[in-house]
Length: 182
Image 1 (spheres, rainbow, N blue to C red):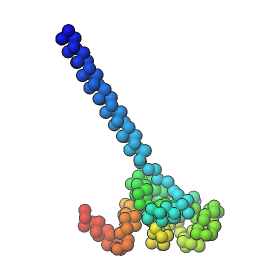
Image 2: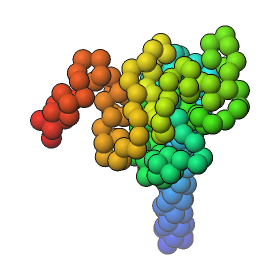
Image 3: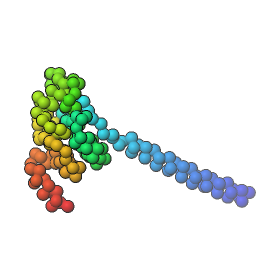
Image 4: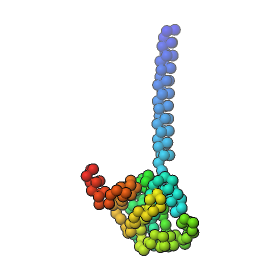
């Protein structure tokens, strides 16, 4: 009888240990799936939504002007906007818009409707592609970036604008500060 109680106790102990492993494994799987759900995917916003997001979340807006027939635009998209690190920075620090400078698609700019082509030429004076304009959270122009930029330089520029260094430092000063801190 004492031997049977020990066996039952041993079986219960083994069962508790096995159940503990199952519960731990399930909670780890659930934590991993929750982490994956938290990962945001980079997406371009419509112009008016990006300006609203910028204002509400107090983040700058990145306006990327491109054209489908622009080789440098394709290079910018393949090397920069497809880069995971660039996408992570854009998700964290910006409201991002992709505007086709040859498109007749309508956008709402303030109280007026205009085409993406008009927006490019009239509001942002885009004369070459690709061009990027950065706006602050009040939709005021910070700076423009004409032409293709290598990904390393682009990352520096995104940090400079996205983290607000532009408010107190020139870009060369920022690069010097960055180098000193490394």
